[in-house]
Structures are given as structure tokens and as C-alpha cells.
Length: 468
Ligand code: NDP
Image (cartoon, rainbow, N blue to C red; front, side, top):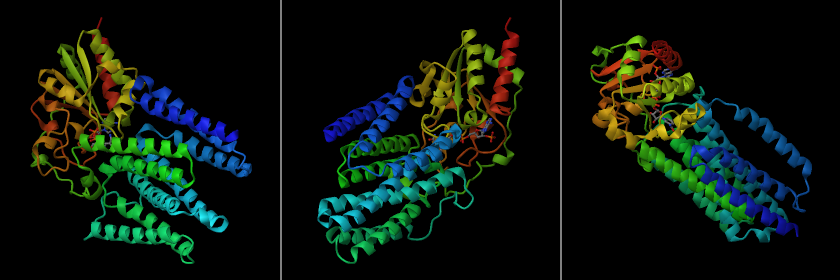
């Protein structure tokens, strides 16, 4: 009876997980998606807990309390820190899978060794290798993104790195195969911890050659490893919900990683083995000699008023300045004058996928005025003013023209093709990729130096003051 109820609960939870992902497709339903995911998790925990075989209730209460103690503060991190927060969540997921796999092996070994069939052992070994390497890999990724002092930010490379990694992986697989074939041999329980140690080490080695710029893609890949380890755990402990939820997690992580690779024009192998970001930041040729033209807010407001088509290109700086609400006010001012205003959204603008969409949705800017890069680029030559709000790499024409640039080949929003460009940033410092941006030196570009929230606020004041 209880079994039937728990299986039904798992079915409902699986369906809710699928709907949750589906609802995440658009900002309009994303909130519903989050609620569905929370409900699915609560149902899954509830029906599992109600199983008669679950008897250690105090431990479960303690575990849930620990989860709250960590989870509540984690939910309060600023939006700009969400990538590293996500990496930490994957680390916890990996740790959980690894620990469950370890406990399961030793438990079965002492209580029911006959249960350690070849099938279950393959699942267990896959679970612990993927789980533990996700743990250390995700911790390294979070450390890099948070710029923790003792985690090197730049890629760490050494001769024969990939060969050494492959060798290490080969040895781990050989040990894993031996334990899988002889799980009850006297040496197997002693070899198991060696496999765990190798997986932990492998997680670190896998991440150190990868630069900060590729971290979000790597996090998506680690997401998919965590999902796969949950699938393996589902097979190992015979739990169908874990198989479904893990498969959803694994495949969505992989799809996201592929989308991000495309947006940065990178191949998967290039991200994982390419040591991107290792290239020493170089100044564009003769950049020192080049001159920025500054504009005053008053001047920029006048030009904006005369425009009939304005494209706003937000980037990481808008997130740092939390300028989205002021941007909304500017949008309203321009719309009031009958000016066409569109937002050009680059898929990797900011520091996480969908970063700009989230911020602009928070400021209630209609989704219909958010235009994706591929759609807006053909219109750029007809744009009177491209207003760059704290974006840098995603509008850098070097991606199109400079083969030596670390961002060469990345598709960009072609702000340089607009009739005029205003670029808001605080200083002459480069963006995330550490390189200069020719756009800022172009004949058609005028800089509005300052914090994005202040500058846009001033622009709004000018426009509001000028309209009677
Ligand atoms: P960039 O990081 O290239 O540039 C941001 C610019 O914003 C900087 O030049 C900075 O200049 C300016 N800025 C920072 N703070 C402020 C502020 N308060 N007011 C005004 N300007 C400010 O951002 P992009 O969005 O153009 O590009 C994103 C980059 O991040 C790409 O290289 C992408 O590959 C990478 N990336 C993207 C991820 C994603 O998933 N979206 C994840 C990780 C990396 P200054 O300091 O002078 O103000």
C-alpha cells in the first residue's frame, strides 16, 4: 500500500519536474516553474520519508535543518554571484551522490554482499566517480568565480596536462573495473577509497586549466555530471524518481552548455581542454595613443531626443550598477516621444545565462521589446543611437576582425554599425576578457563615463526636464 503511494508520489513529482523545466522557457511562466520544482522536491522528500523502511527520523530532521541553515543564506546572494552559488549547489549534489554511493557499497558489503551484482556495482562506481569529481570540480569553479585568493583565476597549465589527466582517468577506470568485477574481494573495500580520492583529484585537475570566462559553461557541464550521478544513484538504490530527475538535470545541463558554447563560438573540447583565458591580455594596436571622445549628459539627451530608433545594449555593468529601474525610466521617456526603443540581448551578456532578461523583467520592461542578437544585428545600420549600458566584450568588434583576440569568433551585437553610439562605463578598464574595445575609439562613439545608474538617472532628469 505504502509502496503504491510512494510510487504515485514519485510519478507526480516527475511530472512536476518536467513542467518546471517547461515553464522556465519564458519569463512569463518562470515563477510557476520554480514553484513546481519546489513542490516536486517536497513531494519526493515527503513520500520517501513516509516509507516504513525509513526509521531514523532524528537524522532526517537534522539533515533538513542543516539544509535550511546553508540554503537560506545561499538564497540571499546578489544576482551577480548566482553563477558561483549555482556551482556550490552542484557541489552539494555531487557530495550527496558520492556519499550515498559510498554508504550503499559498505552497507551492502556487510549486510547483503549478494546484492552487489555487476549491474549495481557499475551504477555505484559511476555514481561515486561522477559525484566526487563534481564535488571538487564545482568547488574549484565556485572559487574561481568568487575570486577566492588561494584558487588561481588564470588557467593553470603544464606540459602533457591532458595526457596526465587521461592517464589518471585510465588508472581510476582500471581500479573501478577491478572492484566492479570483485566487489567482495578482501582488497575491494580498501581500493574503494582510492577510487574516491582519484575522483576528487580528477575534479580539481579538470577545472584548473580552464579560465574564468569559461566557468559558466563548465558549471553547466558539471550540472550535467551531477545529474548523471543522480541517474546512477537511482539505478544503484533502485529509485525511479532519481533516474527521471537526474536525467532531466543531466540533459538540461548539457543543452545549456551547448547553447553557451555556440554563443561564444567555442567548441566543447575547446572549453574543456583549450585553456581559454590563458592568452595574455593585450591592448589593441596602439590603443594607448587612441582617444576616447566624451560626451556630456546634456549633449547625449539632445541626440537621444532627435532619434527615431534607439537600441539599448545592456551588459554586466548594468547588473553591477543595478541600473535596470533607471533604464526603465529612460525607456519610458523615449517611448513618450514616439521613439522606437529595443533592447539587444546577447546570450552571454552579464555573468550568467539570461542575466539581462532577469534584470529587465524585474524592471517590468515588456518582453516584446527584448530582441535577441541575431534578430537585431541586421537592423543595426538603421539604428540612430546604440546606447551601450555597461556592456563591453559583447559589443567588441575585435571578435569579428582580430584573429589574435581571445574573443575572436564570438558573435557580437554589432553596435559599431549604428549611426552613433553612446557607451556608459566608469573607467577605461577592459571588460571580462581583459582586452581593449575598438568600439570606444570609433568616430561614431561618445563615452558617458560614470556609474550606469547615475548616468542614466541624469539622462532621465534631462529628458524629463525638457518635456513640458
Ligand atoms: P564585460 O564584463 O565585458 O564588461 C562590463 C563592463 O561594464 C566593463 O567594461 C565595466 O567597465 C562596466 N561596468 C562595471 N560596473 C559598472 C557600473 N557600475 N557602471 C557602469 N559600467 C560598469 O560585460 P559584457 O556583458 O559585455 O560581457 C560579458 C562577458 O562575460 C563576456 O566576455 C562573457 O563571455 C563573459 N561571461 C558571461 C557569462 C554568462 O553566462 N553571461 C558567464 C561568465 C562570463 P568599467 O569597469 O570601466 O566601469
